[in-house]
Image (cartoon, rainbow, N blue to C red; front, side, top):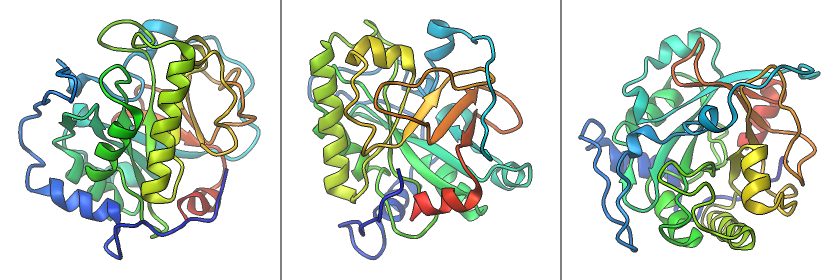
Length: 276
């Protein structure tokens, strides 16, 4: 899962830092979603975040075997959490954070600058994620929007690979009206575009049930994309095809930290290695 990073094409400032600065001026502005290229306007993007659809579809499964290796604690947040007390979260043991940056091609998290810069300034390793709407526009289009609005990557040792949140459709059909082959193509388009723009393949956030249902349990991403699995239990359960282990595990939707609770599957030095 750990690959030698390449510098972002956006120059010495770094894509992530540049995008965060662009958003800083509107960090507290009301969240408004604009129509994308297909005219779709998400009606509740502030309620869409990593795991927002999971409990309704999968509940909280019974436990299993706990992880055998050291787990590093972290969190993920979105505009749903608003301004986060990052120094407190860091003092309570959070080593990393993923922050929602975008959804579709018409929404940016109005708290992104506070959350993304704040987690970094507290000493955490942080990264940005995109909430996918595969029926709204192409994977390449959404990847480009994401990278241009906070989803870049910098080789500063404190920035996680950009992440794709691909889960149950909060606006309709579970698989967004796409066939399994079309969904795989969409994810590949997103992944390859992020890689071409940043030098990193994105982490993929999903659940085993959604992945099986909507991609046919495709095994083609495990060699390049770190897995961020969602399962609210005491074990990760069965992983999607192609991955022999998870890199991140979202194990609860509430707890010690604001937002969702996560583990990195390894010690802190391995998390630092992933950040490059």
